[in-house]
Image (cartoon, rainbow, N blue to C red; front, side):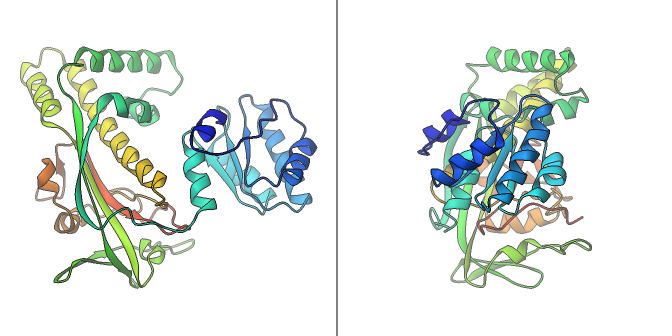
Length: 339
């Protein structure tokens, strides 16, 4: 966390390990820090994080509190730690999320990187592998994260990618930003002077009754994106399917393609964060935008065919290893389940 934050231009005061809550609070006050970060690698750390949160609350601090590490989870953070502190508690699933969230909280003003549509430079596998979320990879294979089986699966996957190092695998991407307006039940996108598209955004039936349109102002900017594996990857995968002599290798490559597409979507989002654009990237078909038919509207906004994505009559994307969605930059925007 220290290295990643420093590489992104943040000054870090590293207090070390096994630090008393009082020391953390006193340093936060004396040094006028903007954020406090806690890392928990062993189970007792979870209780100590609660102690720190309570101590920060008693001291009247209101700076954001970031928690992460092997023993932490989003659920534990939300249920056990967050209620103890009024300044905002955020769970970081890995070190790279810290500078992204820090910029979002400390520099909430949005900067539109460009207007109109742009095809992104192809993204290489080497650049995307570090961004793969292996938890979803293991989930697809129904193996437990951290198990010996999961580690063997990951080694096989990386070895397979290495064996195709000269095949030219990569991910194609296209992005677009345009003027937008949030309405009661959707987001109206003004593609150009003569063309607009209305994106329906379902609202939660319970809880906060949120809809994505709540995070788009009357005079705003919204983006869109699509990513997909390139022709080299597709051709190799199709050849493996035809040969049908190694189904494990074929399934492994297909699952890797899915994860590389998701990693590409995250890579593009991180580039936007660095450029000053915060917010979220809700993808079509995910809980916040569950109607897969929304993809047809997105296809009117973005030239998905230009990067090789075609749609079936049911709204499925081909290649299967594709992700498409929107960029919403409101500082309070968040993911939720609208199903």
